[in-house]
Image (cartoon, rainbow, N blue to C red):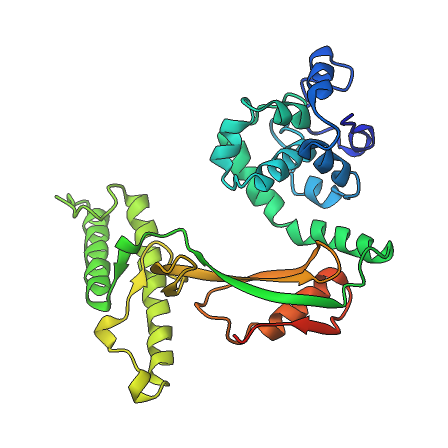
Length: 312
């Protein structure tokens, strides 16, 4: 039976009370339908080992009482295991999934609440993972001394259709600056290009991103100039993503060209645990070994003695 009495006692009073509890008849009916090995039970049992005080402290305690973050975390963990990574999907699934009803004791957070929770909980991911890894070492479930390093290219949240070169980048910055000046002088901006935002705040956000794109392109051009002449890219062929300027361009795991990041993990050889993880704004595995060793030590408190790596 999914039970959270220990969690209930640790939840500060400033959070809204869940609609149901363990004595609610409908919740008991839902719980009875779940098999003993259901993912929802696995998640709830694992959460009993977490100290969620850091997560609770991210809430200011002012304004309307928010939904309980421990119940929201349980729902998110369930969704992530099923491959649902977006708050908008969590919002749609919560009122439609019986296991999520049980895990959340009937809570129905708004869409904006899910996005806010992602920001709050995201800052404590390392802390929560480190808690479990340290406990695993203490209980001798792993020595955290032998791992396997693996990296994978992951597409950035940016469209390949928004790649621009230096000429177009400079033109768009000039157009944005001209529109901003007209607006500051009280003049009508007139017809704007299809790519330009229609509001002043939107144009300010675009100007910031294009400025970031220009900075990133300058850094890449400087690195390009250090390469041998045979490997050097022509300046007019250097592209940058206006949607995610920091993301470098390369081939992802599906051999599609576009903006991407490289995600690395250190997997424990003797258990299913992940001893370290990090993301890099680069399209290759170069120079990622030292930072991954440091990340693993930070999370586990142990130094790796053996590490398996591939040729990259």
